Image (cartoon, rainbow, N blue to C red; front, top):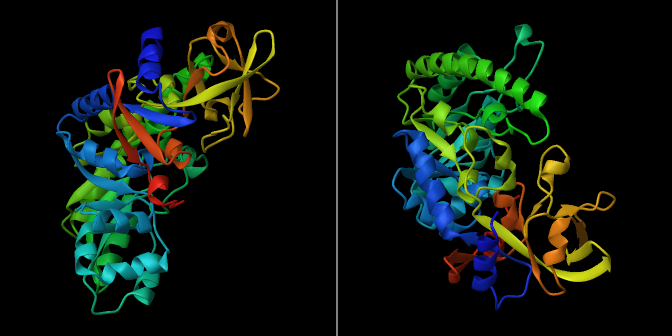
Amino acid sequence: MSAALRDRLDAATAELDPPFAVVDLTAFRTNAAELRARAAGRPIRVASKSVRCRALLSAALAEPGFAGIMAFTLPEAVWLARSGHPDVLVAYPSVHRAALAELSDETLAERITVMIDSPEQLDLIDSVLPSNRPPVRVCLELDASWRPLFGAAHIGVRRSPLHTPAQLARAARTVVARPGFRLVGVMAYEAHIAGLQDHPPGRPLYGALLRRIQHVSRSELAARRTAAVDAVRQVAELEFVNGGGTGSVHSTAAEPAVTEIAAGSGLYGPATFDGYAAWRPHPAAFFALPVVRRPAPGVVTVLGGGWVASGVPRGDRLPRPTLPAGLRYVGTEGAGEVQTPLTGPGVRELAIGDRVWFRHAKAGELCERVDELHLVDGDRIVDTVPTYRGEGHAFL
């Protein structure tokens, strides 16, 4: 990160008191363009959990090549659909009865697609909605994990129980046979390919091994996904087949069976993506914390800082002190809830009252900490927009 970027962010936000968060619109738009190029003509469905701001969801969808939202909860999808978004896919099954009841509204039923991987989920929906409802749009999730050694090993996240083409086809027949449902899509999220750093700093052997595993798994999934989609298309016409994530846009787009790509984190360019080999988005989202103490020579303390990301608890889940360059955590304290000491060569540039600019390890989770995002263009703030939290929503 350059000193010029720090100067620009400091100048744009000079009148603000930290903590606060900003999104650099130049980097945001550049990332959108690069995602579009990597998708090679496939439309990109924006993953809302990685954005969590309606204004920036709309900004992404206004970019060429972006269409539709992938929501993370059904209550969120209802809110977005009522806001006017016409195509919202819920990425995870929902048992939220009040939100399911909203699907009796014909407009919402047309705009929202729910995720299914079990007949029990259909039973639950039937228990909530009347039989004379509009058809509920359904997407089936194919589990994308790799299970070598005849299933003795499991590489990837544990999502859907539908792993084989035969299992997916059987689920498709179940949906089609149930009154009140309409099968419209298939999704498979290859989290072990799209969501893992394949070039982690300081771990070259691990990175090389992971890239090899991803290469083999990618080939296995491409063949299995093609067979599964072919099997489902014999049961029902599909409107879409969704796959991918920011870390696998280019490879997923090469699969003929996939009709659209999911991506969202790449718009903000969080710190986790510094450890990817194929593509590193431009950092666009930052948050600032103030220097409040100099407790010892070579150490400054900022107020707050413990904005830790979800996932396996490791050092790469911590926010990254980015500007000025040359800052690192004190090993015995890390990122604290109320205060965070920092050391390193960058401390020499800091005085009481200065800002330290951080990047969150993940994308949308930053928005759970702030009510608004200041949108920076050049060296000025051009707009301030609410996050989900700022609009009074905490969906998870």
